[in-house]
Each structure stands twice: as C-alpha cells, then as structure tokens.
Image 1 (cartoon, rainbow, N blue to C red):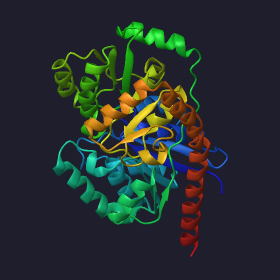
Image 2 (cartoon, one colour):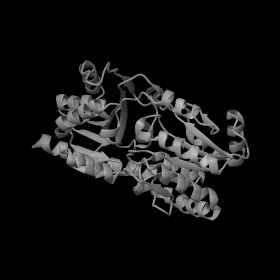
Image 3 (cartoon, helix red, strand yellow):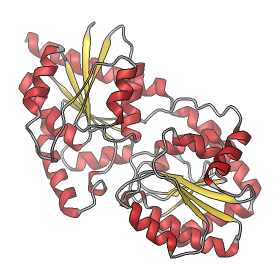
Image 4 (tube, one colour):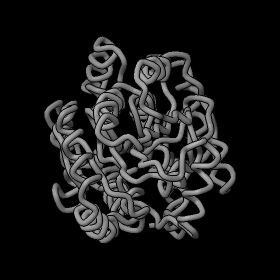
Length: 376
C-alpha cells in the first residue's frame, strides 16, 4: 500500500485536546505510506499551525451547525487532492465528512473525543447533535474513541466497529522548573509563598470550574496562603469572574494561553473538576510536570489516573469531596510525593508513538477492506 491520502476534518476554531490530537497525527504519520491533509470548518489557529509544517490545508467555514453549503467545495477539494479516506473529529466534521465520503465513494473514520451530551450549552443543542450523529453513524466505516467510557457511550447510540485508542502525549521540556515557576508568578502577580491550586481548560460548563472555585473558597478559610489559578477562556468567563468577585480568595484568571502547560511548574496542586471528560490530555501534562493531581472520577479520567495511586479522584460536582482531597494533599507532603512519583511513570503508558501507530493500523485495515470491496 502506498500513496494513501488521509483528509482530517475538524472545526479548528481553538486549540484543545482534539486539535492537539489532530496535529500529532498530521505531523507524525509515516510518510512512506500516508499523506495527511487538513480541512477546518471555522477560521482559527489550527490551520495556521498545520501550514507551518507544510500540511495541505484549506478552510471551509460553516455558518451554523447544520450548514451544508461548504459540502460541494469540500468534496471538490478532496477529489482534487486524491483523498482515499476521510477522518472526522467533532459534530460538524462528522456531518460534512460522513456525507462527503458517501458522495465521493470513499471510507470515513470518526474519532470521538468527548461526550456529545455535555458538549453544548443548551440541552436542545445536545439533543440535536446526538440525533444527527445517530443518523450519520451508519456512514462511518469505523469509529475510534479516546477512552473505553466513550466507546460504551457511542455503542449505545448505534456505533459499530469501535476501537479505543488513547490520546498520546509528547515528552514536555521543563528546562528550569524553578525559574519557570518564579517567572510565571512574577508575570501574573502571584506571591512566591502562595500555595497555588490551578487548572487548565476551556471555561465551559463541562469543565466544572465553578465547583473548584467553591471548593477553593472554603479551603482558603483553612489555608490563608491559598491562591487559585484558572487558565483558559470560553463562554462561562463572565459568570466565573462574577463568582470570583463574590469571594475574598486571591485568584488569577489568565484567559487563553498558548502552550499553557508551561504554567504547570507555577502550581502546587492541579485540579481537573470536569463533569464530563473524554480522557483528559492535560492530566498527562501535569504528570510530567510533577504536580499532584485531584480530578473528577468521570468519563475516561479513571482510565488515566489510577485512584489513590496517581492522583485523588472525587465524584463530579462534589465540592466537599474536592475540599477533602485537596486538603489531604496540602497537609500531607508524603502523600503528594507518592502521587507525583507514581504519576511520573504512568504518563509513559500514553505515548504519541503508540497513538499514531495504532491509528495507522486502523487506516490500513479500512483501506484494505475498501480496496477489496472495490475489486469485488
């Protein structure tokens, strides 16, 4: 098999876990066999990042979630590029990509990165997305999920030929963590003696930052040097800012930061309070940075963080549970060190190389099956 052209389709309006996943595949596929292309459905930073590494990239903006008007131009571009397989990421990409693959007579693969039921601000939008997914799922030749939890969820709505491939994490470089810690704190006005509880993620209901804020406010009564650090941006920013202003807890809300993992050395404790999470790639970054972890026991998180070994897990939305888990780590440096030591070895199980090679095996299987059907 050679000259297999894979078209990835994704929204591309921001850089989150799904976008990082796609960038890894675009850049690390074995070019002896696979030639990656990228189509973005919104104007954003992903297209520019892909072009910097010479990935053929085009943007086909969708005006609204059900906008099918880009489909003819998208399929013409795919035909011109000689695409053999379409790989979709996200609801909009699934809609256009599955229909486009059917139109072109080529196979379509979908990677599911998160739970559709929790991806939207309104229940109506979530129901619509789930309904559309059910309608177009039969057009997908195979489905990849980034956790076994998501595989079960997709199977319940009719998905078949499902393979779980965990997100991979590249080794991160923290050349001088002490210097990075000092510089970040100085830049954002965080006292050097503060105990910083931090999180990184889109400011969206599914990420649960409101529960962390409530927990941190109570923790601040017991630990007066506590400082809360929230990194990210999103539709809940104003609501979270209002909540922060209601309480005296020292805090920093940075907004979106590129390469946000570089802020991890400035944290003493990392908390991921999600109410839904496909896998939690940021957890692997925290493990590498040597920051102890408290996270929600939800979605794919328990498949990454072994409870009580690599971090402490709390039921989603359980503010009291977050208070108790964070306090246990603050008060017990030996526990914190034990969690960090275990987690540092744990992240090695989630490598970019494994993710890419396993995905290539799925590509090969789909393309071989497609070729056999065509010949028969």
